Amino acid sequence: MKETDFSKLNGSAADIQRLKELYANHEHMPYISPERDLALWLDKAAMSSGEAVPKRNMVKTPEGYLPGHMIILWRVQFGTYDNTTVISKYFEYDYGIDAKADIEDLIEDGLVMVMTAKESLTYMTAPLLKKWLKDKSVTGFSKMKKDELIEAVREAYTEEELAKKFTLRGYYLSEAGEKVLANNPAVIDKHPKKKY
Image (tube, rainbow, N blue to C red; front, side):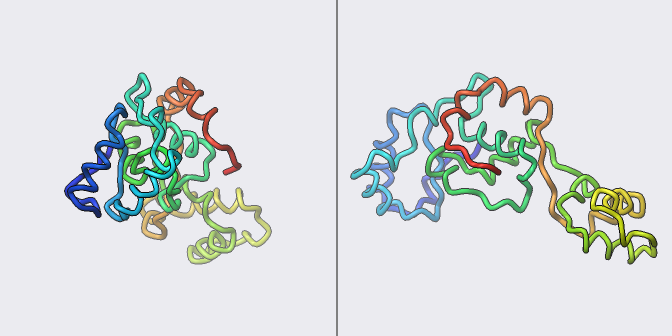
């Protein structure tokens, strides 16, 4: 999982020392983006304990992941997380991880799977699916429902053809990912909930 590169941080040597002191008692150093104004943020953190990543969010699970990684798995299970999803700042500020880079590690570890182009058709709009069918001279699709349109496109196109038409790919949890998430319910219980 991505760690903070102190040489790339937007702050002075004194700021970096203050950062190290702030997190000296944490099991792991939280990720800090090079874009963050370190001096300004450290001043805020000195005035409010709520600014720093809590210690509990820097303690690894028995599987070797941080709570922020459990939140990524939790989000992926809803089926709305894909390679174009805007990453919430709370991953860095509340959980101390670089979610954009770390999801790649979760994919590499086999916990998160990337859908094929055919599987990702569920993210496409009905008018676009109809256009693609028309492009292939398929007829009789005007009254089809979306799931029927998806099936028709899957039959009309090869995976390679579809892969050239759009780059959006959905994510889903593997069996291993589901197991890791199920083993760590306390992390999810503490996370503020909203529908995804």
